[in-house]
Length: 469
Image (cartoon, rainbow, N blue to C red; front, side, top):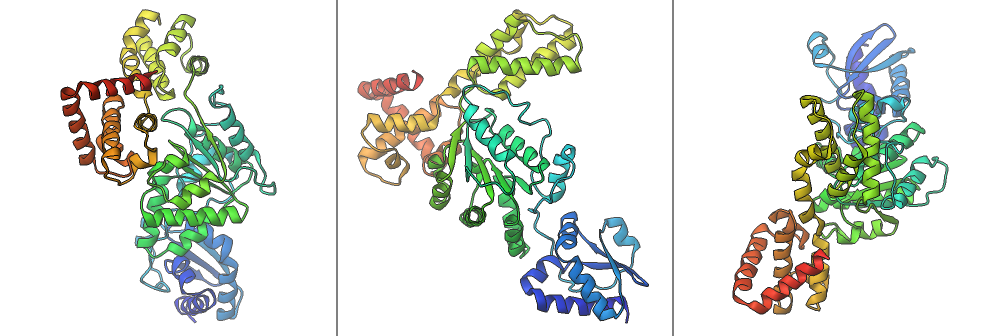
């Protein structure tokens, strides 16, 4: 019996044994590359599909093929390429209506901790940066608890009881939450645990692709067969259906005793656009904040950068007075510190000027200037305005249209626009998912009233003073 006929019979048996959904997800895109004597080579379109077939179904395929061919065979599964597709004449696939597999997949256990980033890319997760480890994370008062909790999770063994589940880490931009998440992923993966690190955007993309390709069951099965799921930037998780699937994934993994680590730019209670069930599930674990970098921590970060810079640029030095100046004046976040330090290196290397305080003042003056307006948070504005006008923050975020709520809401939007660097669409999203035109109307309304009403003008100025204190 020819190989193509045998494969068709094997496919029919697999479909009957495993069901249509499983068969459609994993077997439709398999093709025969080669069948000579007792050696068979099957090809699949992706590395993940090869890994999944090898670990879950290869023995079953060998058994069924041997039964149909009435002789023992060896089967090898390979990833086909465009070149092999042109050069090899294959038997017809089991089902020509093959669909691609979902891009979000389950990493197998890592055997080489030095290639974590490559493994994540190959298997569908977001890439890992091998430089982002616990050893390179500079600890200070603002991040001690978050680092300790993350390290505890990362060093746990699969057989250990889950202590913090889910672990939720929140912080503003550039304060180190992604560094901690990647350190957790790298440490846990090197310890032999099955880890999947994803941004919320990639989770959304994977789920939407699975729905489009009709591989949603495979998507669900993949996510539920890992030891540690890490999701970054949860504030970007969009869509009711995607959020519902994320909630089901949380429940399934937690109920199975698997670990979950999530990071966002705000506490779960402040993620107004997130499904209430997801917020409740996250709040049931441990929530920790990575706070603003104080001056001592900023100085320690700069010292670490200097050590690394000297390794790459022998002879480069930054006097202590310059380090103190940068740490004192670049206050916003770690990324601004990166930028400031890189400018010192660039100026020194390109002009041969020694690194002095005067040179630093010229090089980083824009970073010093823009740091101040970013200190006020939209959440702080909402809370202080709500307190001042004796309404609740939930009232401001709600759809209520009474005068006692509309005016404070408009003032809060006005302050958000004038005291932060957030865009109108972002402000609208943080005020209960409103359109940017609503924010623009509120800003113009309050601007006009402030110019006409001295009492309101004084109220707004008083609110600004409270927010700046």
